[in-house]
Image (cartoon, rainbow, N blue to C red; front, side, top):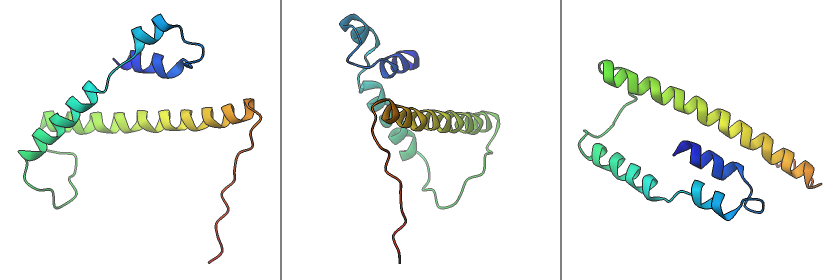
Length: 104
């Protein structure tokens, strides 16, 4: 599924053939299913009232490690999309707006 998501996102709709769009499109069903899993597991846990350190046995430690790897991938993807947005603005000849902190 991740490959399909990447392919779908990487191909501009204006240049994608209908067959490509159908082959790489995805529905929100897996996202909704993931949200249901999160809710189901969360309901079985005691309320979280403190920061949790990566611990809790081998399986838990492996899952915490996986979270760290996922966060790293999210940052790389976010950086890529930021640079790509700037590149798109340049190619379209559009000016980027610079943030200027308001005076207090």
